[in-house]
Length: 151
Image 1 (tube, rainbow, N blue to C red):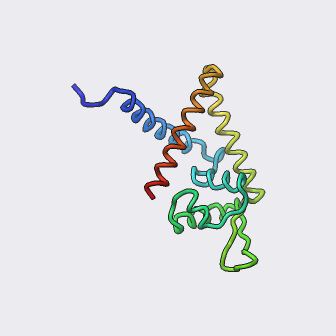
Image 2: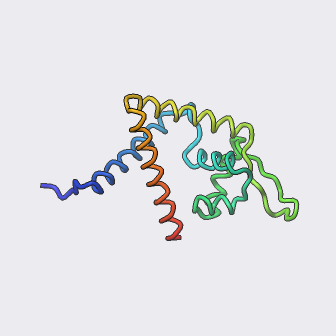
Image 3: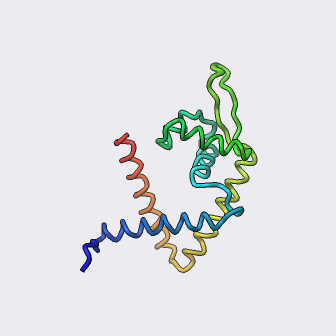
Protein backbone atom coordinates (compact mmCIF):
# COMPACT_ATOMS: atom_id res chain seq x y z
CA UNK A 1 0.00 0.00 0.00
CA UNK A 2 2.08 2.94 1.23
CA UNK A 3 5.76 3.60 0.83
CA UNK A 4 6.26 4.91 4.36
CA UNK A 5 9.27 3.28 5.98
CA UNK A 6 8.41 1.56 9.23
CA UNK A 7 11.94 0.73 10.35
CA UNK A 8 13.49 2.46 13.38
CA UNK A 9 14.73 5.48 11.40
CA UNK A 10 11.34 5.94 9.73
CA UNK A 11 9.56 5.77 13.08
CA UNK A 12 12.06 8.17 14.70
CA UNK A 13 11.64 10.67 11.85
CA UNK A 14 7.86 10.60 12.16
CA UNK A 15 7.83 10.78 15.96
CA UNK A 16 10.21 13.77 15.99
CA UNK A 17 8.05 15.64 13.46
CA UNK A 18 4.98 14.86 15.57
CA UNK A 19 6.74 15.89 18.78
CA UNK A 20 7.81 19.23 17.31
CA UNK A 21 4.30 19.95 16.06
CA UNK A 22 2.76 19.09 19.41
CA UNK A 23 5.36 21.07 21.35
CA UNK A 24 4.71 24.12 19.17
CA UNK A 25 0.95 23.74 19.63
CA UNK A 26 1.42 23.55 23.41
CA UNK A 27 3.55 26.71 23.32
CA UNK A 28 0.86 28.66 21.49
CA UNK A 29 -1.71 27.60 24.07
CA UNK A 30 0.44 28.71 27.01
CA UNK A 31 -0.06 32.40 26.25
CA UNK A 32 0.78 34.51 29.29
CA UNK A 33 1.91 31.51 31.35
CA UNK A 34 4.95 31.20 29.12
CA UNK A 35 5.59 34.48 27.33
CA UNK A 36 9.03 33.40 26.09
CA UNK A 37 9.32 31.95 22.64
CA UNK A 38 11.81 29.15 22.05
CA UNK A 39 14.66 31.40 20.92
CA UNK A 40 14.17 33.83 23.82
CA UNK A 41 14.14 30.94 26.27
CA UNK A 42 17.40 29.54 24.89
CA UNK A 43 19.14 32.93 24.75
CA UNK A 44 18.17 33.81 28.33
CA UNK A 45 19.20 30.35 29.51
CA UNK A 46 22.62 30.79 27.89
CA UNK A 47 23.09 34.25 29.41
CA UNK A 48 22.10 32.98 32.85
CA UNK A 49 24.40 29.95 32.67
CA UNK A 50 27.39 31.50 30.87
CA UNK A 51 27.19 35.21 31.68
CA UNK A 52 27.34 38.24 29.39
CA UNK A 53 27.92 37.73 25.68
CA UNK A 54 28.23 39.87 22.59
CA UNK A 55 25.66 39.54 19.82
CA UNK A 56 28.39 38.00 17.67
CA UNK A 57 29.19 35.34 20.25
CA UNK A 58 25.49 34.56 20.69
CA UNK A 59 25.05 34.27 16.93
CA UNK A 60 28.01 31.86 16.85
CA UNK A 61 26.60 29.77 19.71
CA UNK A 62 23.19 29.48 18.04
CA UNK A 63 24.61 29.37 14.50
CA UNK A 64 22.46 32.28 13.34
CA UNK A 65 23.44 35.32 11.32
CA UNK A 66 23.98 38.51 13.27
CA UNK A 67 20.87 40.25 11.89
CA UNK A 68 18.64 37.39 13.08
CA UNK A 69 20.27 37.39 16.50
CA UNK A 70 19.95 41.19 16.68
CA UNK A 71 16.18 40.93 16.08
CA UNK A 72 15.86 38.31 18.80
CA UNK A 73 17.90 40.46 21.20
CA UNK A 74 15.73 43.50 20.38
CA UNK A 75 12.58 41.49 21.18
CA UNK A 76 14.04 40.47 24.56
CA UNK A 77 15.22 44.02 25.21
CA UNK A 78 11.74 45.44 24.47
CA UNK A 79 10.37 43.16 27.22
CA UNK A 80 13.11 44.28 29.62
CA UNK A 81 14.61 40.78 29.75
CA UNK A 82 18.17 41.78 28.85
CA UNK A 83 20.57 44.66 29.44
CA UNK A 84 23.27 46.06 27.17
CA UNK A 85 26.58 47.28 28.52
CA UNK A 86 29.33 48.83 26.42
CA UNK A 87 32.74 47.23 26.36
CA UNK A 88 35.10 49.55 28.24
CA UNK A 89 37.90 48.90 25.76
CA UNK A 90 35.73 49.27 22.63
CA UNK A 91 32.56 51.34 22.95
CA UNK A 92 31.19 49.92 19.68
CA UNK A 93 30.85 46.50 21.28
CA UNK A 94 27.91 45.76 23.57
CA UNK A 95 27.72 42.96 26.05
CA UNK A 96 24.29 41.45 26.52
CA UNK A 97 23.33 40.17 29.96
CA UNK A 98 20.16 38.82 31.49
CA UNK A 99 18.16 41.29 33.59
CA UNK A 100 16.22 40.53 36.77
CA UNK A 101 13.05 40.56 34.65
CA UNK A 102 14.66 38.14 32.19
CA UNK A 103 15.75 35.80 34.97
CA UNK A 104 12.23 35.85 36.43
CA UNK A 105 10.65 35.20 33.01
CA UNK A 106 13.07 32.35 32.34
CA UNK A 107 12.49 30.72 35.72
CA UNK A 108 8.71 31.07 35.30
CA UNK A 109 8.85 29.50 31.83
CA UNK A 110 11.13 26.73 33.10
CA UNK A 111 8.72 26.00 35.96
CA UNK A 112 5.76 25.74 33.54
CA UNK A 113 7.73 23.53 31.15
CA UNK A 114 8.99 21.30 33.96
CA UNK A 115 5.45 20.86 35.32
CA UNK A 116 4.23 19.95 31.84
CA UNK A 117 6.93 17.30 31.39
CA UNK A 118 6.38 15.97 34.92
CA UNK A 119 2.71 15.49 34.05
CA UNK A 120 3.43 13.91 30.66
CA UNK A 121 6.01 11.51 32.12
CA UNK A 122 4.22 10.84 35.42
CA UNK A 123 3.60 7.18 34.60
CA UNK A 124 7.15 6.53 33.39
CA UNK A 125 9.57 4.69 35.65
CA UNK A 126 12.65 6.63 36.78
CA UNK A 127 14.97 4.41 34.73
CA UNK A 128 12.84 5.09 31.61
CA UNK A 129 13.15 8.84 32.20
CA UNK A 130 16.92 8.47 32.70
CA UNK A 131 17.28 6.48 29.47
CA UNK A 132 15.14 8.96 27.53
CA UNK A 133 17.13 11.91 28.94
CA UNK A 134 20.39 10.20 27.97
CA UNK A 135 19.20 9.41 24.44
CA UNK A 136 17.68 12.82 23.71
CA UNK A 137 20.86 14.48 25.00
CA UNK A 138 22.93 12.23 22.72
CA UNK A 139 20.68 13.12 19.76
CA UNK A 140 20.91 16.87 20.43
CA UNK A 141 24.70 16.75 20.78
CA UNK A 142 25.05 14.86 17.51
CA UNK A 143 22.78 17.33 15.71
CA UNK A 144 24.82 20.23 17.14
CA UNK A 145 28.08 18.61 16.03
CA UNK A 146 26.75 18.02 12.52
CA UNK A 147 25.48 21.62 12.26
CA UNK A 148 28.88 22.98 13.27
CA UNK A 149 30.68 20.78 10.74
CA UNK A 150 28.32 21.88 7.95
CA UNK A 151 28.61 25.60 8.67
